Length: 278
Figure (cartoon, rainbow, N blue to C red):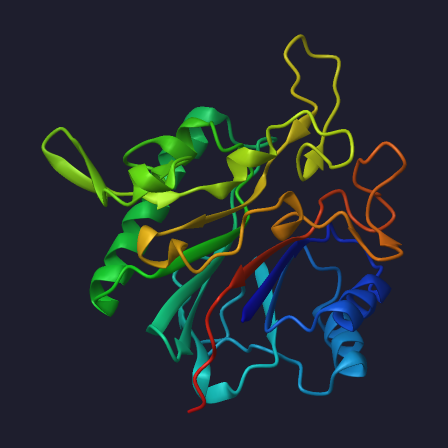
């Protein structure tokens, strides 16, 4: 199984939670957004498992996301750094040869309204489509902080991420809009819109005096191409959003993110695939 963790740490200096997470599951890839210190996180991971290392940029470009891995160097590499909010990896697998794993830290709502976000998603989508065409396959997963909910225009627009809540619809392959085809992503995050009192209703909590306020938001998401979707484990709520691990709790008593750790919950992607030994 390939295991991937993403966490927006909100510049929090705390790193012990990484050690405790790794003691529970040694993730193959760990993406961190808004890291206070790459070096401190790397030291913490290495203390838990000496195989961990930071994935260094081939071009030394700065990115909003940092990646750590314990995968053999020959099986994983950064393949595109043209956008500083999108880190794109190639991973070699036994079953599917190459898959593309992207981590995203999209533009925030404080500085970008919904129209800005919709426009910017179109740039990201064009970039990804061009990359997939060059790689000659569409086995792609994106994990990260989209700074949008699953129902927002940038997520569902044909020219945006085009991510739908139905796998059967996604498996149609593409939708046609104005005589052009746009490939689907499947978004499994819709299942978190539930009335569960035992599980958080999102990954990020926000409260304000405005007349329209969701409070719970699903900003941290996974979207996946239908060519790869059957390998994603997502039947249970805890398969993706992590609010506690054994005695380690990332939530307060009212199930909101504990800000002493981060204002976001971590999320994971578990794929029923094996990494190729190369």
